[in-house]
Amino acid sequence: MNDKFDEELEQNRLAYEGLREQIRRDFHGQYVAMAFGRIVGVSPNFDEATATVAKLDPAPEHVLVFPAEKEPAWESYDSISSEYL
Image 1 (cartoon, rainbow, N blue to C red):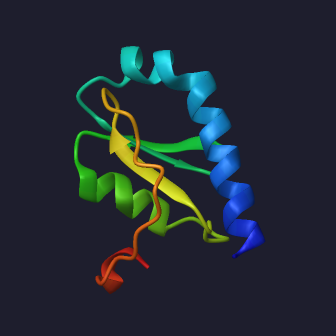
Image 2 (tube, rainbow, N blue to C red):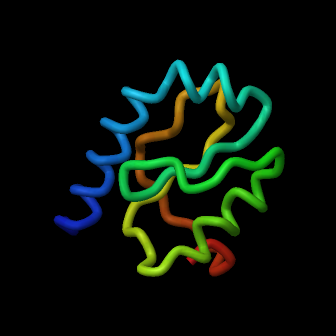
């Protein structure tokens, strides 16, 4: 396992738990991007929220992009698209 990935996943999980109600209230109907234990972007469009993450330097090991009114997916999955790398 990648220790940095696991560390960032835990940072994002803890941050989300603390911000859950604010995210749902303030960003309803939008996509939220989280990395490094903080919100790094909010957009009405998934692709724009994802593009915000792609611009981060250094690049995060773990990111979340999710609709504000839903729980983010905590399971890891591999994307076959290089668009999100």
